[in-house]
Length: 146
Image (tube, rainbow, N blue to C red):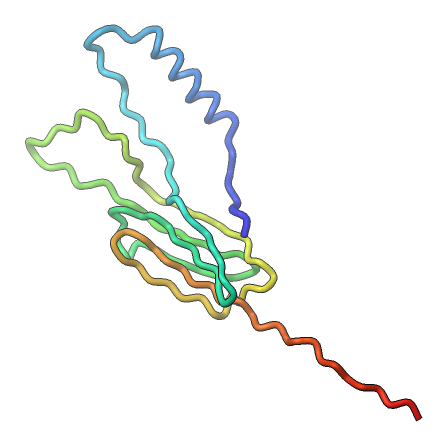
C-alpha cells in the first residue's frame, strides 16, 4: 500500500526561512513565538497471507474522534486531537505537540477486500485489519479429443 501525502514546498520554505531568520535575530532571554504545526498520525503497514495490518499512533485522541472508511479504492483514517482546555492559573511556556484535525489516505491494493475491514483502538494505537480477497486457484481441466 502506498501512502498519499501532500507536500507543500511553500510551507517548507517558509519554515526554513523562519528558522534561519530567528537563528540570527534571537537574543538571549527572548521568547520564541509559539507555532502550531499540522500533524498526522504515524503509521506502520504490514501484511501476511490473510490480511493487511495498519497501526496508527494517536496519543490523546479519543475513540469517538476517529473515523475509518474504505471506499473507491481508498482507506481513510480521519480524526482530531483536541487541545486541553486552558485552566485559570496555568501558563504554557511551550507547546510543541500538534493538535487539530487530520486525514490519512491509503490506496487499497487490488487483493484487498474493502467490505472486510475491522478496527480496534487501544492505548492510543488504532489497528486496522484489511482482509485479503481469496483468489480462486487455477483449475486443471483435462480436454478429451475425440
